Length: 388
Image (cartoon, rainbow, N blue to C red; front, side, top):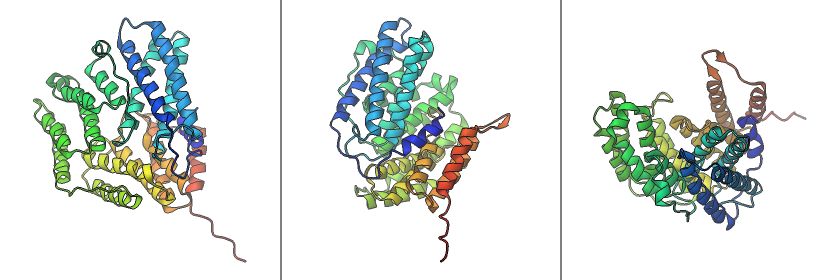
């Protein structure tokens, strides 16, 4: 099923009020963490045991399916977290693990392993939204972790919310001059992932500044990256000068989100692959998630979804199917026939056209065109009531 169309069903299930506490959420997270930490080393090993991999894939598929179904029915949800991003990522996580297990059962072992290796990215996307989240009991064995590359170790640790260990791996990658010389875009990706933790999870400008300073000291740093990093450093320096702000109310968090989003749009970033305003959009997206976690007012929720969508579009993480489209669609459905819905629809259409355009032109599937039509009708201004 086209993922854009799957969202229509998923988003129709989103609640409008704060979800109730679910004590089983922590237990489910621990089970997922244990399974991922046991399975990932097997996936990267040339001597990985096929039976162990199939067993782990089956367990992960079942756990992720339970997570998705429980979340859709609002019976398995994190305590005091109203952010609809969780539902979206749970749906994608379940789809990916189900495909992987099916491939492995049919003998397509390497393809299934490739799919399973990517599932940690969904964990990272969810856990790196902000500093709230489950505390995992899973502690991978040293023997198994040592079989992983630095990148794989970082992904595993961050997926398990062991952020300090994950940052240590990212810092080693960023400090590697050979990596910068041979794979400069991977090098930048690891730096950006480390900064996402420093900014959104740790909310620590000093840590962000240290990461950027280390990167700037790299020999053979290309001029275009040096220019970008210098802009990031300036943004962090400005952040350091801001007074400490501690708010946890819907109104206070919304005002802060608006301020940060305004600052991000005042940056010098002009193109999607520019990333010169990376720090500003990381902060704006984190603030949007903070609002979504607690907001009850429909207009506030729609505004936060719009801010999240525009921020993710600017951050443009290549590991994911465009997350901004999820936020734009959710915004339209949250507050139909409003100015916010129209703005989100305009951004959604642009993203879809961009995604389906290549060297051969633009080719949008018919089912996606129908979805665009339905969303356009939802976003359109309300028709005036007939007189009389």
